[in-house]
Image (cartoon, rainbow, N blue to C red; front, side, top):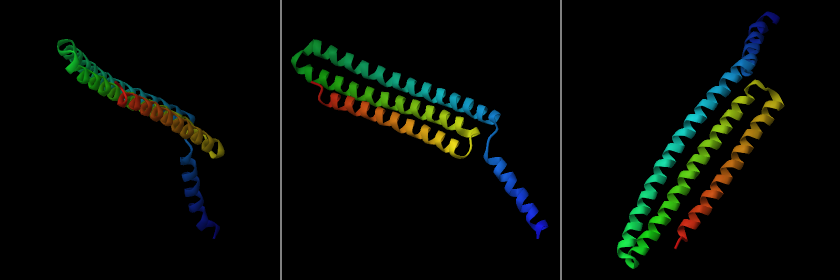
Length: 152
Protein backbone atom coordinates (compact mmCIF):
# COMPACT_ATOMS: atom_id res chain seq x y z
CA UNK A 1 0.00 0.00 0.00
CA UNK A 2 2.82 2.38 0.86
CA UNK A 3 4.49 1.70 -2.49
CA UNK A 4 1.30 2.60 -4.36
CA UNK A 5 1.09 5.92 -2.53
CA UNK A 6 4.72 6.87 -3.23
CA UNK A 7 4.21 8.00 -6.88
CA UNK A 8 1.14 9.99 -5.89
CA UNK A 9 3.09 11.69 -3.12
CA UNK A 10 5.92 12.55 -5.52
CA UNK A 11 3.49 14.00 -8.04
CA UNK A 12 1.78 16.04 -5.33
CA UNK A 13 5.15 17.41 -4.18
CA UNK A 14 6.03 18.37 -7.75
CA UNK A 15 2.73 20.20 -8.18
CA UNK A 16 3.08 22.00 -4.87
CA UNK A 17 6.63 22.98 -5.67
CA UNK A 18 5.52 24.35 -9.02
CA UNK A 19 2.93 26.61 -7.39
CA UNK A 20 5.47 28.90 -5.79
CA UNK A 21 7.82 30.92 -7.94
CA UNK A 22 11.44 31.41 -7.10
CA UNK A 23 12.52 34.97 -6.29
CA UNK A 24 14.37 35.02 -9.62
CA UNK A 25 11.21 34.04 -11.52
CA UNK A 26 9.23 36.67 -9.65
CA UNK A 27 11.85 39.31 -10.46
CA UNK A 28 11.69 38.36 -14.14
CA UNK A 29 7.88 38.53 -14.08
CA UNK A 30 7.97 41.95 -12.40
CA UNK A 31 10.43 43.28 -14.98
CA UNK A 32 8.29 41.90 -17.82
CA UNK A 33 5.13 43.38 -16.30
CA UNK A 34 6.86 46.77 -15.90
CA UNK A 35 7.97 46.68 -19.53
CA UNK A 36 4.48 45.75 -20.70
CA UNK A 37 2.94 48.48 -18.56
CA UNK A 38 5.42 51.05 -19.88
CA UNK A 39 4.65 50.12 -23.49
CA UNK A 40 0.90 50.14 -22.90
CA UNK A 41 1.18 53.52 -21.16
CA UNK A 42 3.29 54.91 -23.99
CA UNK A 43 0.75 53.70 -26.55
CA UNK A 44 -2.13 55.19 -24.55
CA UNK A 45 -0.25 58.48 -24.16
CA UNK A 46 0.37 58.63 -27.94
CA UNK A 47 -3.29 57.93 -28.61
CA UNK A 48 -4.32 60.63 -26.14
CA UNK A 49 -1.92 63.13 -27.73
CA UNK A 50 -3.38 62.43 -31.18
CA UNK A 51 -6.95 62.81 -29.92
CA UNK A 52 -6.16 66.05 -28.10
CA UNK A 53 -4.25 67.46 -31.09
CA UNK A 54 -7.19 66.75 -33.39
CA UNK A 55 -9.62 68.26 -30.90
CA UNK A 56 -7.44 71.38 -30.64
CA UNK A 57 -7.40 71.66 -34.44
CA UNK A 58 -11.19 71.48 -34.45
CA UNK A 59 -11.38 74.26 -31.86
CA UNK A 60 -8.91 76.40 -33.83
CA UNK A 61 -11.00 75.97 -36.98
CA UNK A 62 -14.15 76.90 -35.09
CA UNK A 63 -12.39 79.99 -33.68
CA UNK A 64 -11.48 81.06 -37.21
CA UNK A 65 -15.11 80.69 -38.24
CA UNK A 66 -16.12 82.66 -35.16
CA UNK A 67 -13.74 85.47 -36.02
CA UNK A 68 -15.15 85.58 -39.55
CA UNK A 69 -18.85 85.33 -38.74
CA UNK A 70 -18.94 86.18 -35.05
CA UNK A 71 -22.49 85.59 -33.81
CA UNK A 72 -23.47 82.72 -36.10
CA UNK A 73 -20.18 80.93 -35.48
CA UNK A 74 -20.35 81.25 -31.70
CA UNK A 75 -22.47 78.12 -31.37
CA UNK A 76 -20.07 76.22 -33.61
CA UNK A 77 -17.11 77.31 -31.47
CA UNK A 78 -18.87 76.33 -28.26
CA UNK A 79 -19.77 72.91 -29.67
CA UNK A 80 -16.20 72.35 -30.87
CA UNK A 81 -14.85 73.28 -27.44
CA UNK A 82 -17.34 70.97 -25.73
CA UNK A 83 -16.42 68.11 -28.07
CA UNK A 84 -12.72 68.75 -27.45
CA UNK A 85 -13.33 68.67 -23.70
CA UNK A 86 -15.20 65.36 -24.00
CA UNK A 87 -12.56 63.79 -26.25
CA UNK A 88 -9.81 64.90 -23.88
CA UNK A 89 -11.72 63.49 -20.90
CA UNK A 90 -12.09 60.12 -22.61
CA UNK A 91 -8.44 60.05 -23.68
CA UNK A 92 -7.32 60.97 -20.15
CA UNK A 93 -9.50 58.15 -18.82
CA UNK A 94 -7.97 55.62 -21.22
CA UNK A 95 -4.48 56.70 -20.20
CA UNK A 96 -5.32 56.56 -16.48
CA UNK A 97 -6.88 53.10 -16.73
CA UNK A 98 -3.96 51.79 -18.78
CA UNK A 99 -1.53 53.10 -16.17
CA UNK A 100 -3.60 51.67 -13.31
CA UNK A 101 -3.82 48.25 -14.95
CA UNK A 102 -0.08 48.28 -15.57
CA UNK A 103 0.68 49.12 -11.94
CA UNK A 104 -1.72 46.40 -10.80
CA UNK A 105 -0.06 43.80 -13.01
CA UNK A 106 3.38 44.76 -11.67
CA UNK A 107 2.02 44.46 -8.12
CA UNK A 108 0.45 41.07 -8.88
CA UNK A 109 3.71 39.78 -10.32
CA UNK A 110 5.57 40.97 -7.22
CA UNK A 111 3.27 38.71 -5.19
CA UNK A 112 4.46 35.65 -7.14
CA UNK A 113 7.23 34.60 -4.74
CA UNK A 114 4.91 34.74 -1.74
CA UNK A 115 2.67 31.97 -0.53
CA UNK A 116 -0.31 31.43 1.68
CA UNK A 117 -1.82 34.35 3.55
CA UNK A 118 1.02 36.67 2.54
CA UNK A 119 0.31 36.08 -1.13
CA UNK A 120 -3.44 36.46 -0.60
CA UNK A 121 -2.92 39.76 1.23
CA UNK A 122 -0.52 40.98 -1.45
CA UNK A 123 -2.95 40.15 -4.26
CA UNK A 124 -5.84 41.66 -2.33
CA UNK A 125 -3.88 44.87 -1.87
CA UNK A 126 -3.07 45.02 -5.58
CA UNK A 127 -6.73 44.54 -6.50
CA UNK A 128 -7.88 47.13 -3.95
CA UNK A 129 -5.40 49.68 -5.29
CA UNK A 130 -6.58 48.97 -8.83
CA UNK A 131 -10.23 49.37 -7.86
CA UNK A 132 -9.46 52.68 -6.16
CA UNK A 133 -7.50 54.01 -9.14
CA UNK A 134 -10.21 52.95 -11.58
CA UNK A 135 -12.88 54.61 -9.44
CA UNK A 136 -10.83 57.84 -9.34
CA UNK A 137 -10.32 57.74 -13.11
CA UNK A 138 -14.03 57.14 -13.68
CA UNK A 139 -15.03 60.00 -11.37
CA UNK A 140 -12.55 62.37 -13.03
CA UNK A 141 -13.78 61.40 -16.50
CA UNK A 142 -17.43 61.75 -15.55
CA UNK A 143 -16.84 65.17 -13.99
CA UNK A 144 -15.07 66.35 -17.13
CA UNK A 145 -17.83 64.95 -19.36
CA UNK A 146 -20.48 66.80 -17.35
CA UNK A 147 -18.44 70.01 -17.65
CA UNK A 148 -18.19 69.47 -21.41
CA UNK A 149 -21.92 68.86 -21.68
CA UNK A 150 -22.68 72.13 -19.87
CA UNK A 151 -20.01 74.15 -21.68
CA UNK A 152 -21.39 77.41 -23.05
